[in-house]
Length: 447
Ligand SMILES: Nc1nc2c(c(=O)[nH]1)N[C@H]1C(S)=C(S)[C@@H](COP(=O)(O)O)O[C@H]1N2
Ligand SMILES: [Mo]
Image 1 (spheres, rainbow, N blue to C red):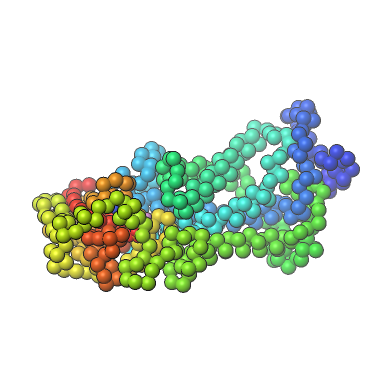
Image 2 (cartoon, rainbow, N blue to C red):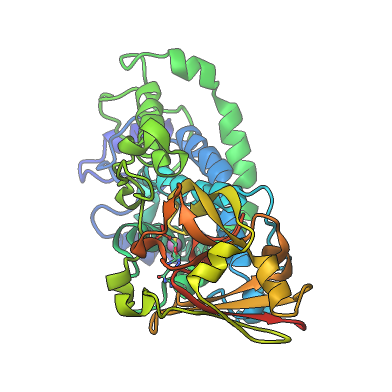
């Protein structure tokens, strides 16, 4: 309060730095550029440790969920087959386990949460950054070694979250537009952010809890704009010369919560489906779907993948290798026992769609190749170029009774863009490994 009083008398329009630097020479304090220190330019009466801590609490709940589901996606890609990127992550590798095939919607859930949850945090991240903006202009910029380390960790924290959100959102919207590998950058970026978050939490958690206890959320939600005043604490976030509130704390919280909810509503439909799909305006790749059977989202068309339609005609053969080789045409495959399963395709980009697939069980094909108990399968496409033209499947992904080489979908022959003459569909598998336009499958007996 005394501080506030002093600043009112400060004709220069700048308040004195809150704390007189002890270890830092007074000269540095006097070098303060305009706008730095406890500037009168920050006039919002809403800024203060309590509001910042409420935003922090929201992020503390949301960020681990998004980070964990992101890391799970890395495991789901099957790093031990060299399929996840970056391939070699050194000591940053995660405890690996066989990604389950059950429940069939597991990847749809984890990746849906990751891709919808990430963008939902954008309004919250922006609100939190807004709430701590004055700290960016603290003067002196560094007060002690501990303070220097704290500020350094903020580069990783703020830089990390903005980088993850930007690369993630761009990837969902624009399909690998980077000059670098999206997966590699997003993976390492996540670890930079996680490390900085751990440091930040160690330094700030107790202050956050204290600030949260300083006011009652219930009271704030009942306080009107007119009755909203600055937080009555001596803190560098609190304005020295607060202006009148243009928004109450209730309004600010409502605005941010509304923003979070809006992003959710405008994107969740791409995986929930049904009528909600039409509302998924923010993530348009999962929105379009026609009415005819087999008319649903296409990740990459045959043309885009460079698949020559001439090679998908009557001269197409499926080549099986293992203990023995087989070459089967589509009529032979259709003559084998057919199995139908309702399974989702769940893309890493967050969209998904559940369809009725009919085809031959992969385990029947494994038996035909003389490897009834395979350690893995390597599926290759007719597609000649591109990262998604081949994939490894784990043993359980081959042996699951619903794991299919699909020949039909929704009661019709597979459309060319969905992988005609045959494609893989396996419960719980990330979309990318449901290889389309399959040309060959190798069943391996040893991993
Ligand atoms: N050969 C091949 N198979 C592929 C792809 C591809 O680019 N080439 N894309 C994969 C990806 S990323 C997804 S999400 C699914 C999408 O299947 P759909 O296009 O039939 O919806 O196919 C997968 N199979
Ligand atoms: Mo995908």
